[in-house]
Amino acid sequence: MSLIESEINQQPQAIETLLAEEAENISRIAAAIREQNPSFICIAARGTSDNAARYAQYLFGIRARLAVALATPSVHTLYQQAPMLADALVIGISQSGQSEDVRRVLADARDQGALTLSITNDPDSPLAASTAHHIYLHAGDERSVAATKTYTTELAAIAMLVGTLTDDQTFLDDLRGAPKLLSQTLETAQQEIPNWAQRYRYIERYAVLGRGYNYATAFEISLKIKELCYITGEEYSEADFRHGPIALVHPGYPVILIAAEGAVLAKQIDLLHKLNERGAECVVISNAEATRPLATRYIALPAAAPEWLTPLLAVVPGQVFAMHLAKERGLPLDAPRGLNKVTVTE
Image (cartoon, rainbow, N blue to C red; front, top):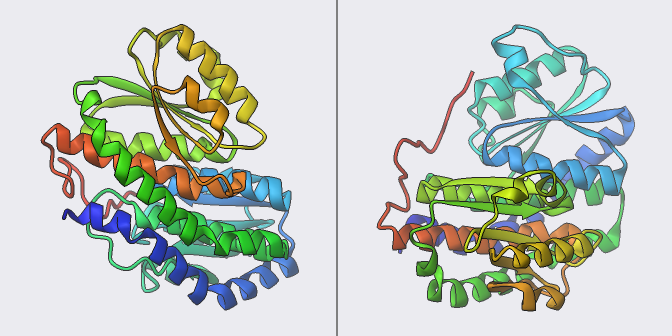
């Protein structure tokens, strides 16, 4: 078994460990946030962790009514300027905690008196050491270059913080059910995807579409396909896709669409009809039965999952698909060309 397959399979247990081990720490962090009462949140991240930050934009905005901006680390490093962050909660997200530009954003913010928090899988990392508070992902060693379990634990850590900050017990109860739902999603994906992944062996381009909470999922699934399969692809909000890029679609064009039950579903179904009219090859990840007849390939999510929780689940079929597509193309799964596990940017 490859490292990435093993690490994909470890995700339910990794999240269960995180939920058990970090609850008290996150309660203290939430208390500190309430005391400081920040005006907004700024998140610094790169790569996969930047996609977790996109999830945080929606979750904090919708559930805690806190606006979230994504930092521009180069402003701090290459341009030697520190934007005004004193009134913000500034969060750095990094699996390794090694990126100097992300660390620099947090160091500058702390110098200004901002409340700082890091989320990493290494409590001894430079990023963890540079912040007032730290959430440890407890994902265990992740040795495959393409991140899987550190991504889903990042999402779970963000959700833990939001649920604790808002003191929403129903939300937290639903989150505690995530490992079971993730196991169900993983079982479904592993049963179905290997049977048809070879259909897409020779694709040269694709699009991945999401909206709302799953805007982040579109970015992360697309990144996994790029990393593992070396295929040019684009990721879009369903809304943005209508503003021009839909012209790309022709018969046989592969489109992966995440369509969870919730506020965005009607828009996703409408777009699926338009994609079908153009002959697109629609791979749909959904817990809405209404999308099944519109899908070329359908991957079911657990029906019980609330919309905000579906990004922790919907990314898993994307991970499994990218892995099997790489297998079909005869590519290395654990060490994609030109990539390192830890990428340090300044």
